Length: 230
Image (cartoon, rainbow, N blue to C red):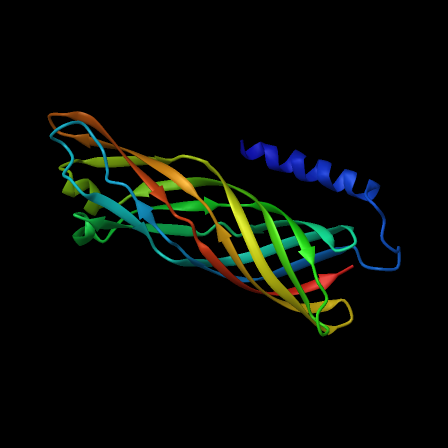
């Protein structure tokens, strides 16, 4: 699934010049780079597992994080543009919740969540607000469980895997020109991210005990960027 993004982006960039053309003297491309503050809105189901091995009301929450944001925008025609945004994949931490709250941190993973959006741009009093809608594809790597989690379930070691996720993404923002071709941008983005964590714990007398937990992360992302149009 991950490999779909590179050819999709390449195809988009090849086809874009065939869209309705703007004046050749006007910049059609923009890049933005800056900081993104990620605030998760976690909705966790109860963990499930073999009967007699998993207490009730075991849940998890995702800690807030931050990352480097990178955005590329290509004007299509008039006020419409295509936006591709990524971030340096942050390591996110999972804390126990519900009956598992006393455990503190129970796991971690590196999150990758590129998004592609269609944006509509305005011009108001010398600034450029915009709204955008699109889709994000999220996957995870370097999944780990903590010793606290493994010990709480009477195990000797644990491994985990988080499912990939497709979801919607919505964005509002504003670009403020500060010099020729240069601008400062502020934006709010909402991602819808839904995943299932599958955890396997090696347990004396029971072998590998498998448990699952469904998590909706749905982060709010607030970003401050510097942009260049060309």
